Image 1 (cartoon, helix red, strand yellow):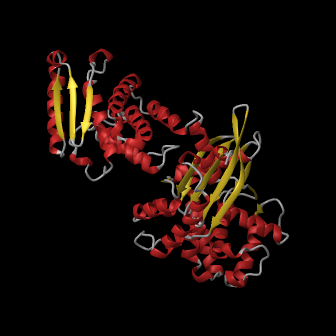
Image 2: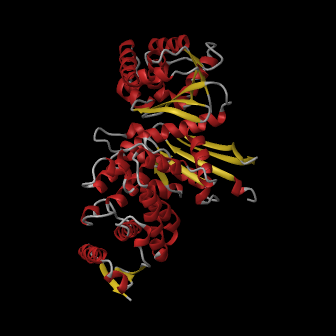
Image 3: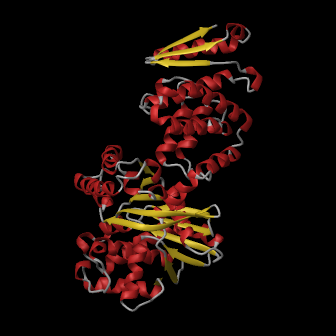
Length: 499
């Protein structure tokens, strides 16, 4: 237990398997390195439970919950700061994901982030790059998952291009090889269909170029093991070996009758689809060989989490890049953030344990609240929310993006528009702090602000301002009166108090 604080855990709710790694963290000269001390894998096949209406069926949910309960037992002595759990494609696309996630978090005992495809690609590359030597040249990383495949070109620790495509070993197996049957026609169709998907990134990736390819998924490792076990190739995967494996699967007629050495029982159900996707990647991107690494999403999640805890949070980098890309007024954003956080601090007791998380997201909302001005001043808060909700934002989970977008959407205008997107009381408080901050700083100068006192009890909002200052700022007084009416219509009791 003495070393527990130096231990971290990463959990990956994949479309094919749920995985967990527990790692020891060692630090040398300010650089952190992780070493795996325990791992768990369960072939949940969550993606196989996606029905035609894009909902997860009961059986797949139950398999997932049971797996997470077992993971949760292993993590009982861990604190929230030591664990990061992410969910990928199957949960991303499932319409009943919120209900499943609620049960999943209860089973695991920790929050679960649903990450977008681009974020998954970034984290995969983060994990891979930390397990490979630097100075090897530009690399192409391919991670074939259950429902999506991530493609990344990077140099050392820096990803240069990232794509996530909706093809994977589970989805392709279901579509082309039902009941495990493998025919030459089905394999040809599966490979051609996958090539069509991969073709969309071919030109851009070829323009960047790479010196070598790396496979980072369970599919890649399983195919490499088949190469080795059957005496085909010792150093990963090659094109001729893929063709031999493909022909052997077709000859067997069914994966359950396949006599290839090294084919593990828990990979049988998705091998045909995974092999078809890998063949398509090799053919479309003109690969001859691919090495394989144990690094991937789970390790990337942990390195990213460690970065957040040591002042190297990728989310901060993303916010700064968005401010630059959308040419926001950073000085004004900083003033808005400063006042909003002052107001939030005055009502800290209303947040409870959520305060630190809420403080961070409110700061980001303030810094990004005007990105929509690049589209139009008219309705800029709507444009800002749209950009934040739909852009690729490295480091942010999809729910984080949505919450920040909701807060930004609420910075002005009617509050009723938020009723369907905001349910947590703490998020309403963030909206209040942002609205008041932008209201008082409408002149966009620092000397326009005065002391603002904010108190909330139950549904009572009290905003206190100097009467003399208000008399000297009639526009602000009018705006506060209008603001009070808006909150009162939304079920609150907003009172403007003067002293």
